[in-house]
Image 1 (spheres, helix red, strand yellow):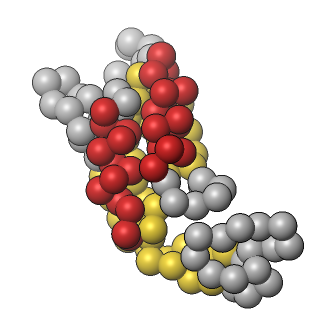
Image 2 (tube, rainbow, N blue to C red; image 1 turned 45 degrees about the vertical axis):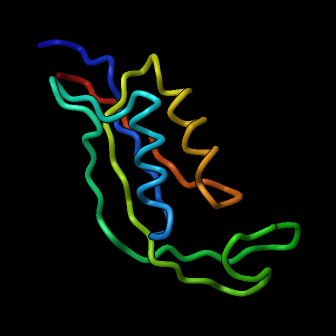
Length: 108
């Protein structure tokens, strides 16, 4: 058994920006599996949030519950480029607060 140096990064993106975010992640080093690059998986869903006082929402209004068509984008990522991938996501993601998850991958 080989211990992995990879993680899976998952980010939730409004439908209008999925290609931009996916491309930025790939350019930063995420999505490489063997001899393939830009490997990702996406599933569609509805993101819900309510901007509170002090928020500057891209979509919606402060104090009102909002529902947005979003995609969950998943890509594998070497740990050594994770910081760069997160920075790339934040550069192109339209939301003030980016919802993302990092999952360790224990074996290759």
